[in-house]
Amino acid sequence: MPVALENDNIIRLIRCVIDELRKDMIILPGITTIEKIVKDVRKTADDSVIRIINQALTAVQKQRMDALIELPNETAITTWDKIIASVEEAKTLARPINYDYLDLLDNRYNQLRKYTPALVKSLEFSATNSSLDPLIEALKVINDMNETGKRKVPETAPLGFVSNRWKKHVYEKMI
Image (cartoon, rainbow, N blue to C red; front, top):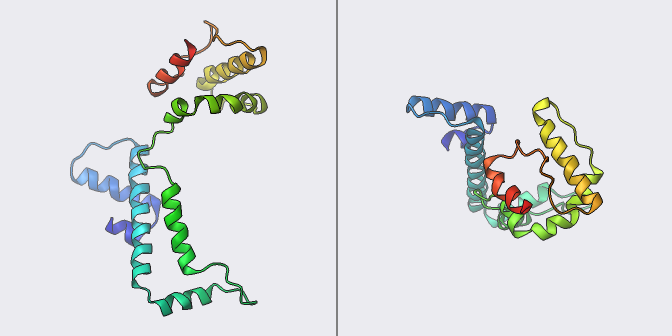
């Protein structure tokens, strides 16, 4: 984290993580894992800086900070305390770092089912490469099922693109 406190250049931080892992002879995880580590460390560093600054400022200094962000007609855009309160509020609204959005499929399936047919119908999906063609075909099958009112997924529906993480959600819903 010391490097993250000194520098917010994401590429540099990723390189530092990779260098440390190599130095310690640790097998490199995938780049998305490294990006997540850097993002988490960067957030922790940002929070630390805000906390350190907030604790170090006196009431007079906070008033002077507020004065710096006043408009010419003496209407403040926001105050330092409001900035801190906003950061605290955002922390309460944010999902946990290990939050798995796929849980929404179980917990909010009925709610998702209400608006996804309109979403699938109104958006035009296309693939950037042919490996995604089965997914595009599956979306067409879903759209057809929504329009015709069918509830059973056809046996011929493409499913080869379904990853292991998604299988329990896709196959359970098909039954």
